Image (cartoon, rainbow, N blue to C red; front, side, top):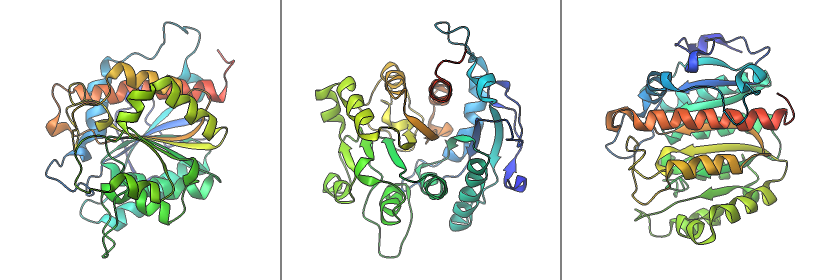
Length: 310
């Protein structure tokens, strides 16, 4: 792995800040990049540092499973932040793809923090090179599958349009879950489905119930490698105010934890929690919730890799 692509930090939950992935089954990595934001709420480039800052109060043990330490089991390290180049969009995308690819080559599950949703395209490119039959699980208030402009401009909104065009996923078994609210493009749901994705809007998710939706996800996805992409605006702004594009009517923190728990057993090969925007955050609430979600994801990854391990 090219160590020149990373910047050192104080590790999440005091995990070792290390680029030695020889014994790391999973690793945290920050991606402080927000050039894809298409509105005025810029600031998610500071998301990784805010998550680390506000999550010093988090603890690592689940009292329901006191014998399991997922961080020791997985050998988790914090790789620090990828050294992107603000102002150079394509260059930064290449850097992100190469850096995440190096983690995958070490057989390490990246647990990435954005940054805005544009980081998910270079992550997808890296994942598709290492995992055949890759499936996307995207939880977001938006599909981020908007029509791409003729000039080829990449924003947070075009991320999964380009990914589908580039055939990065098995789109027929990939999901966008939770989009809601008024939209700038009248036919966004139709356009998203036209790319081949499965789409479960927030209204349908509520009507069916989380248990039914997650049962469908598990049935469709099976044992395929899963890229779990979670935009923090999937939550309601009452518990996650510090995001790039807040939309009222989202899920609660409790429901977020229930969803992650409901993904148990899936073959998660990468997690991407993005769009924490500190300039719009209140008392670090969004950053702290993103960190708590990260903890829940590590428990899922540890159980999936060694379900009977202590």
